[in-house]
View 1 (cartoon, helix red, strand yellow):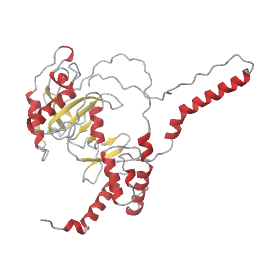
View 2: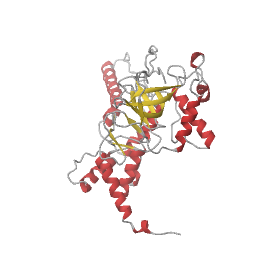
View 3: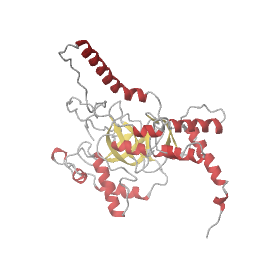
View 4: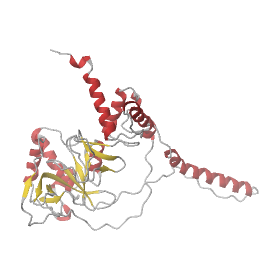
Length: 369
């Protein structure tokens, strides 16, 4: 992941470009008019996708949109490698460990595997056993190290954590996006770009900046640019308070810069982008064009109330889902602004209503042998 190249910009390309040239005939003016018409037609074809996207679309239309063809891009020079830098002073020894509460049993196994790897050092040209395991011996291997450790736990316990609880990934942003699609990525600042504010499930307020304290087994993602691209990942071992009450995150990480090691970072470190969670502990504002598991859950809730048809349960918010949210806000949330955005208040009111309906359903009281 270190030093990964930026993704190419995306644009639209015609499969069969039309080339227009003037013929030397007696109907020169007609040829010029024909040429103008053809050029206008090509221009309209190029603008058509933009014009379509100017209006909000329903769920089916959003799914049918074809991914634009990547436009060619000039090669850039390889940037200088940047590594995650600990901001905890070595002289800072006093700490009080934070009790994370109950964590899944597999987390202890995962941390034990990672701890045994401490001291492993890469060979020439970044070569590692983690890269070999992933299929690229010379990969920048921070993600490969984490995935390898998870796979070791799966082999030991006969579990299936990789690709279910944790992503199996390599490369920039892929791991973060996997957690985002499943609604299990917490931004350190408490706000997801293009989505909105986040909150811990059951809490009565949105997360504030640096409020979420990671737990053992969380993955901590780093970003070194304003775009928020992920450049490094580390496995959270535990958290502690220092003598001034600041949260210190203890991690086990690989490829920083060349070995598996323990490290410490302050929670408010500007390089920390956020955390991938192995458990469902956070919810996020949902709005038009958002996609993922939590969107599908929201659509299923709206469907149970009879305000969203089954065919619109696509996992992406289109105009039908937005209108259903507005209908719920109008009919069940007196005084609520009709935004069509499923914020914390809207999602919690919807979930609470469905729980009340389920509780009052006679079938839920039946005793079976």
